[in-house]
Length: 170
Image (cartoon, rainbow, N blue to C red; front, side):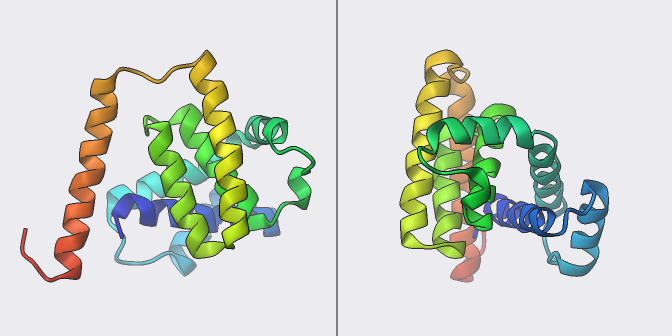
């Protein structure tokens, strides 16, 4: 598993805890990393996870409004906690991170496959795809060069993961 995916999973766990416990964000992050977070996670991944979690929590109202507009017949509060936080996390990446939107959707779906149900994965995909279309219409992402850099980074991570899984030196 790539370090950025692991970071997203850590961020999801923090968001889940925040949703359940209503703990202040700074306390939540401190507690997560001291008691629950994986000790061997790289510093860059830890920083990315923390930025995603705190950013998502800071923009929850805006994120929920975008999700609500595309989640026909679903209230945010009625969604499974995991599912609504996967959606929030991905929409946060759409709006505030340089991650290509398609990559953010794919990452969200992989995490949903691990932490939620098959049906939820389809539900999440439909909502994220609709939000992506809305944003692409009104706020196209930057040039292809920036996107290809992010995709290259993702490919490098995948190569490193494959090497680690098969004990192949870099």
